[in-house]
Length: 140
Length: 393
Image 1 (cartoon, rainbow over the protein chains, first blue to last red):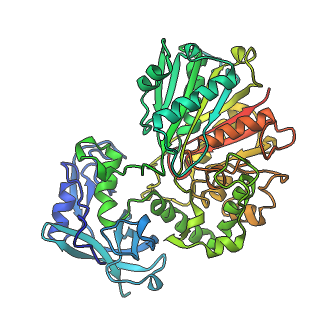
Image 2: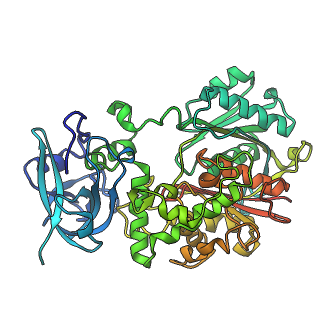
């Protein structure tokens, strides 16, 4: 993906609920929030477990492996974020752990991707202070 | 209490007002709102002094007190708001509840937006301190990946739907074709006398794949307003009342506005399914009794998905239901979006769908369904949802 040098990157709003996720990403690790009481994994992070209402949780490392659950291809610049050069692919990945995450394909072309395609996480340091978890094809 | 309480038949829509649809209204949003509310009051035979309740769309820039001070409304006892694509039917429900509970007698529901000339703000335009939690989630987990646009978020859901039911995206073209066919008959439409063909659809440019340009609405400058009162008071006013027989809102597990990607199944519209169950049950009618439907067509591919969720056809059969328009155009068993809706009349965030339902009950639509007695309205496909069943008696 190509980012415009003149348009600001969109940075996540990091707060007390989600900072563990983004701190791990910065260290090239993918983690998901896990309930310490009932073990439920969720993404995105939230203050309370939606299953047992416990507020005790930890960050569980992900295998980084998943499959493409759905995808779109931004073709027309006016409907996309102007800071990213079109076309670019946005995917929903279903992880082995069962949670889903919105991301981008790191180096795939539109012709090469499909729902069900095995993928694995890669970390893209797109700026000194911004790393994003992205996905690439995984050999099986 | 043993008696099941319901707002069925307690309230009616007695006045409607709608502006033209344009790319540049050359009027402020407040101006459009006042002008359109006045039209709805004139339609009902009421004056601003009669109005004691206002229901607005949360994102609407025209605040209640700006409306009251502009129009000379002196005694408001009820005001509230509703959000998202679910707003239109939900605002009507809120007003019906207000008059049914007796906290107000005549309530105006309004929406006014210069969506084309004053491009709508996305959360990036605000500081994070002003954002809602839903906006913050999108800012944090969608935006860095360039996934902010509503069309892109809707397209993600539709892609999965296509995959699960083996639907070829070209089949979605029948929705805009039929909506434009109906809108071409409507002098107030942005597309009056401008129908399109499937060939036009196929030539329409890909915007965010799988969506083509013609799969979703164009921004417009427009406003719309409704007046709601009790069923008893409605009988003394100028117009034939459109009684509210069923009204419901729904959010379910992991509902998000066009972003419900985290739940088990994203290819159904469970909120709309629940709305359907509740409004049919409240009204005491079935799908066979519905004479026409005004569905949320901001994104055309959500129309077949709504037909499935509401029970007009089986799962995965919606695209086939729309094929060649044979079952959804005027004269068919379920005419859909007879004013043109968002795709064929203009986009005022689903309010024109409610107004068209009232016209059908009155018998004044430009694509009138013969003897229309019961009309369904669905608002908010792909997120929080709401719906209505309106009837003439």
